[in-house]
Length: 141
Image (cartoon, rainbow, N blue to C red; front, side, top):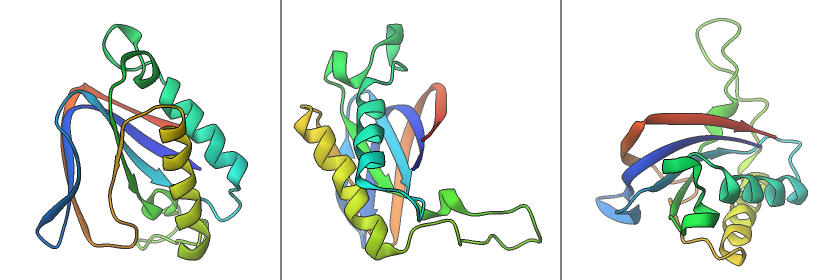
């Protein structure tokens, strides 16, 4: 499992002209990719990592501040661009494997008390964000 995590002052996801998920205060925008070998244990570990990641102001986390997260599935994080000009997607999980694991990360975050908004799996999404810093990290399990 891999995530690109940006500290943001606000972020939203739009599908077919409607906002389906948004945070309007400082928090984290999480672009989440699932590898074809990932398991429910990876989802649990990723949620724990995201919740406790100390990249908010004063090295705080969503866990310590109650800051929200916007989680958006992003299979393209596993695009392999080492050869040629067209990415290979063989490392990315198939939708039927990835969707339950993305949902498991979101569910685990919510069970930890996190405020979580989401995009819509397999939808054509427009993601908007105001990066704070800018501060962006890659979280890889």
